[in-house]
Length: 251
Image 1: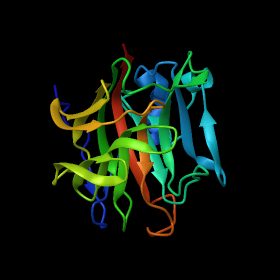
Image 2: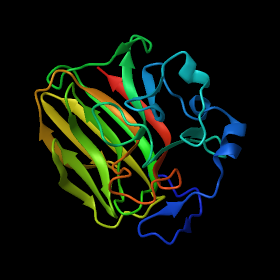
Image 3: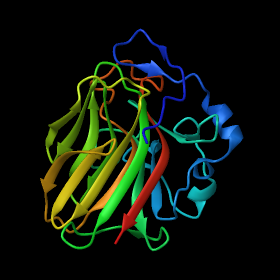
């Protein structure tokens, strides 16, 4: 069932922001992120570091032993993975926002995953907590389905309001208007028959119709702020998500 809050958070004097006191260095000393939860081989990681337009990517087999504190690190109890992306982080060439995020792969991590909403059943379950949001524009994506050109749907926090998005409509379905940073929840997508069903803590929130044929799952912290709309422009201003369970199945 629903996970209980595992940490005590200390408020920072910025609206909507909470800090995680357990240090990433302590987490890194415990184990690697892939050792904290069972990351299958079918993922690659994009980090908010690297040269402009070319963020660092980590694929298997390197991902199995990789850690990059504080952007991608095991939690202090080795029970989850901390994903962090600061507003001044490196972005991909087709996005203005930084991310520390896993992208679904196939073929034991060798190929980019790509599946159709109209063929088979595709499920992603994520047990997670959004633990920190950036100042000024406190927005973050904490799990999504993407296709070849854009996001199909996502769990997106705006301030304290958590939504399921649909395409360009970032506030398509309100899940809760009072999300408290650090609260654990289960996000689940189930896709079949041209329908995308989004669940929050086991309760169906919305069903979105789609016939997209080039889809894949993503999970982690995709901060929806940058130095142009959030201050300070520094590593101390970031979005963060902690995940302690992540599973993907196709049938």
